[in-house]
Length: 195
Image (cartoon, rainbow, N blue to C red):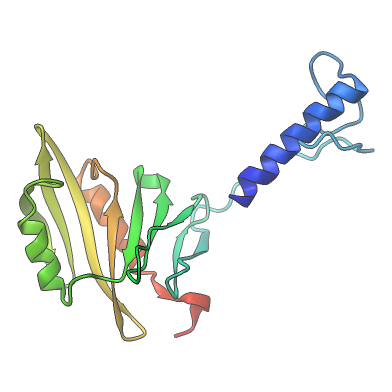
């Protein structure tokens, strides 16, 4: 959010500078940066090189005492979805056109989570588990003739359970896309990286 605000502020400053200083050809006044409108003596530097493909970044899941790791190119925008004492955080994950949600589970065990998924006949009408392991599943559902997939992983961090799952009202298009969530869930760690 800070990046969006600073980008908006930069745009406003550039427009004000143009209005006051007078822009040529619809651009910034000569000798100014088109990003900020601030006076410069040197040309604006070239854009930064993209991060290496295997570069990663850490994303805080506050108010949960956790962090996770995403590819460096991801925005990794977070949203606190907590309700009352039940803490939950959503994180954008553009690589699969969905998101990841990490929460304190309402259920006491992963078996209870799976039972709830099987009983869903309204939001994500359950068809079957495409992948069924002791601490993670990919479920298939169908709504109005469209099939979608959701991933759920039960993770323990510092002795406390968390439910890490794919997010999005349409689910994911393939089981393989849903399984990509597991790699992110596997990076869950205490905030600050403490073990």
